[in-house]
Image (tube, rainbow, N blue to C red):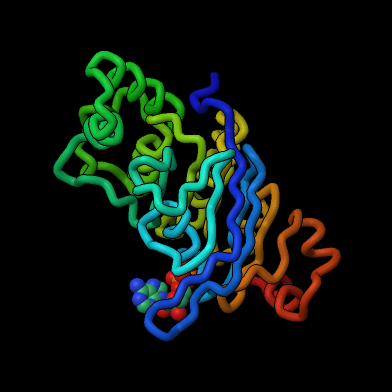
Length: 244
Ligand code: ADP
């Protein structure tokens, strides 16, 4: 079963971002292939979240362009970008039940009640939360909450899904389990995915390709095995070599 329509490639060109006088992203270029799982990997402060927020439309770049398929989206507001987003802290509505949390983006888009029910059901199924629609979010475990966040991100059939450290609040066992589930969900749905982590093992397990970031730049973008075999900068060699 595929929930996502055809995936689209992303092309970011010459992205610049400053906060005050501090340059956070510098002349950054990034191409994500249609349907691939690409991870931004780098130390804290290297600009991963800022890059993701610019893609989502929550942060405005000072310069540059973003194309998704044939469309330039740099000035498109977030809710019109057709991008699903999953955050580290879930960002769910604690007072609402699971169903209403997942239905929220459909409501925003004016989807009718019958279709909403059908799509939420399908999303619950995909994240293995069948039968939990009536449960309040504050009565769920961490893993279940992250599944709700994931269901909410895919329920409107986005062409692109962005995830910012989605598993870092979970304990190790559950994190490894969810890595496998996320990967398998991506294989089934095939949406273009940009994933942020500072955990190299997670990046290597999950990604088709990894962009190693440092100081607001991409140092190297390659398949995991290529990064290991042929790091192109001293930073990449050091960072990939570290155990964590
Ligand atoms: P990462 O996700 O790799 O940890 P971030 O994108 O969060 O990196 O941050 C990159 C840099 O930008 C950091 O130095 C951070 O302090 C700075 N930064 C991020 N957001 C803001 C903001 N809203 N105002 C000022 N500085 C910011």
